Length: 184
Image (cartoon, rainbow, N blue to C red):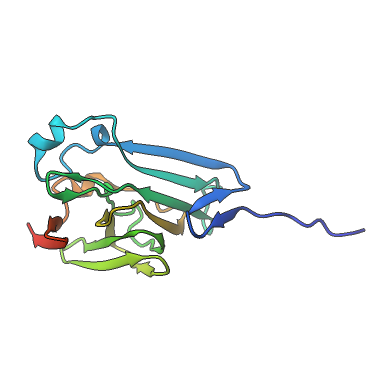
C-alpha cells in the first residue's frame, strides 16, 4: 500500500497569501479601532469603513500544543500624522510567546511588558521577531506599501485587548521622510 502524499497549506513568501488550507479571514476597519489613534477628532472624520488591516489564519484545533499560522496585511496609511497600526494585544495566557516573520513592506513591531517597558524592532522582508511571553505586541506600517507579517502562536494563547485600554507606552508618527517614536 502506497503512503498518501498530502499537499500542505502554502504561503507565497513575496505576498503573504495563504493557500491550500481552510482559512479564517478578518478585516479590521477604522471604525473597529476607537481610542487607538492619538488624534481622535481626525479619526472620527475619516471613512469608518476604510480597511486598516486584514488577517488570514489557517484553521487549527484549539488544544495544548496546537499552533495557529496566520498573516497580517497592514495597509499603508495614517490618521493625522500617526501611521496605521494593529490594535495590539497581550495573550490571555501571558506565558505564551509568538514568532513574527516579515514578508514584505516596512514597519515596526512595538513590544511592551506588563510593567510598561517598551521597545521597537524594525520589520522588513526576512526579519524574524521572537515575541517573549508576558509581552504585548503591535505592528505599525511606516512605509508606502502593505506590510505583511507571518505569525505562529499557540492556539490556546488567546488575545487580551482590554489590558491595553490605555494604549502602548510608545507611539510612532511621520517625521519628514521617516518616522519618530515618542513616549506617551
